[in-house]
Image 1 (tube, rainbow, N blue to C red):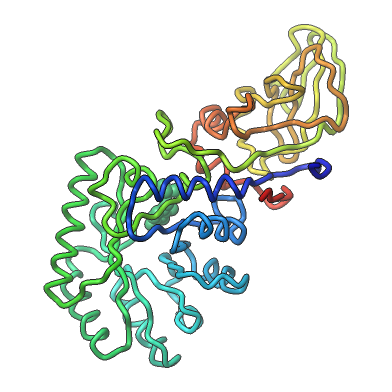
Image 2 (cartoon, rainbow, N blue to C red):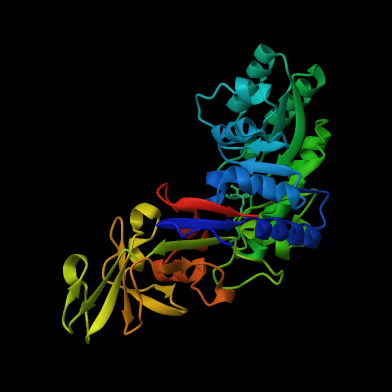
Length: 372
Ligand SMILES: *Cc1c(COP(=O)(O)O)cnc(C)c1O
């Protein structure tokens, strides 16, 4: 029996995450697979998702911040873990001590992790990140020689272990990705000339891991796909993936209104005929995008119904027409479209954004329920 429905709830199907990782890992066939669980696992819950992904065959976990990595260690997860976006004032000692691998994007970070390794008395585990065209994080091409020379010496002296070399693609076009891949191969060769030949070479995130075998190298970093969502807004992967998150609420109020009645702030919407409005207790504080006001749908009583009027901080209104809906009934905001419910992609289209943002923004007031 399922547990009673909570006021605001995101249920996360952990078996779906395990299966999605297994399906993606089988498709890519790389020796290593990193599950990316940054930003609270795209809103799904970092610790349970990390365990589900490891069960599906991921052997690495990836996060942006060291604090996210430390939280996973605190939760008892001892799998290899990479953090790649650092506070300029970071000291790295705790990360080194607790065996967290560090992405290195500046020469300053290389110095700082070496200092930390010396203080802690443990070699720092590094993945050197090279910028191959995203112009975001990563060592600039002009710094590669210096960085590889330094890393090689530090590796010799035992201060660091260079475990990996990586970069990230723009997905701007196949040609742009190919140019970045060539840049990455140049970085790999340059590093090797300096005596740095790590086992883990990783470039691809979900999109290119699925479609570009030549981008897979020895590891792929899978984010959105493990949550069962497509990395593209105009296409779905050929691999069958199951959306893991279902966002629900309970109808908090029901009101029969006459034609002409306005609803929510600014009366952006007025009833065209007598109808029934129901109140859903999720708003932009929950991550429901206000831009989707009047453009999205939800699933109530086995049918899709339109969101009407402005989405507010804590709540929005749905026009259910003459359907018999009562206080306490279930509302599915989004979930697996195979059930008929709207998808995170439907909400993304309504709000002019991407599915990544829809799930990742789900807020603190939403109770997470995990289904094994
Ligand atoms: C977020 C992120 C990923 C995962 O990307 P998806 O498109 O969600 O698979 C991979 N690598 C890096 C560096 C990232 O920041």
